[in-house]
Length: 467
Image 1 (cartoon, rainbow, N blue to C red):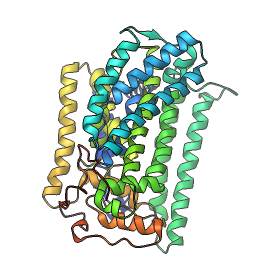
Image 2 (image 1 turned 120 degrees about the vertical axis):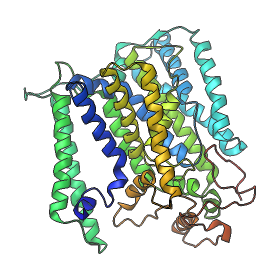
Image 3 (image 1 turned 90 degrees about the horizontal axis):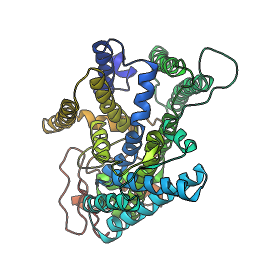
């Protein structure tokens, strides 16, 4: 058992959702007679769910700071219709359309971020209004009609990596991508061991490290085989490449940068973060703006795949993204959640959808099952908290933070962790912030109730004036 704990990062329970994903894949693979793990199905799985997974990347940051964004589907829809009309009527190149869409997303994000951060309207209310406003704009601008997009733009939403070079039996672009992923896994393991030794910690045994790397390489090799040996003209999808790049970028942002530390500090205890010198207004503004930019990108990927923008694009996308984040480990009260966990949660939902469809289950039962899975995942986590046991889902988020061996970056406490925020303030300013007694709760205590000016962050969102 000790060896298994070392193999999977210290506590098997931390990766319960990952294990659930593997079990789901195996179950549906058997139940469907081997229809899940096929090249065509895996490509459809990535193409059909990449936009929701991109939304989950931004949504986890919104939820960590204690807000909810209900407008992402409408933002994606209005961006899609604007870009589609610009491509058709103005004759601009596809890449100019892409930049235009990102600019539209940034403008919408700045609008919503202003109301949340500087006016003080909770994110739930601001984005609820945005959901209605931008849905109406989508239908008004497009006159409730579908607008096609050119073939060059369709590659971004439904294209594949190109073929080149000699005949290897694989798509060479996919093969190269798989080799790069394998090299990264080996490099990361060696670097982690070097950092452990550097700070005086004992690294995992060579056997444990070898088995862990071998398992990851086996998964990468199998995925490379599936995506690289499909029908002619297919390979690893372009939306999948965009998703992988975004996961890497945002994992670094949230776990390795000052802005990422501020996100967790504000979500863990807003009052303590403000007293430590963190600009909570700026953090709220940037997180909301970033969410709309990612929603705009998701909308453009979707219209590329569907070949046109329509009046009903983006409906209920926000619910899928929120479900993915909570299943992937985010805490309802804020302060906990990771990009990687949200992607795993999104893949759980995507696998459920895909597997049930392959089994011939109707959409009605599919929605019921997805709802029960979401409720069970969060209820199980809440139950463990009330029983005084470690939160299974919350532990997933802490695992990624605690895995940064040798890092001098402070790790933010997952709930009510004002001490972490104090550490952040001292790390950035070179001084130690003195906090009131009410703002020094530990992770096992309930968040303190402070005065109405500096309230603890709430899942529906707080944007009070800073002290």
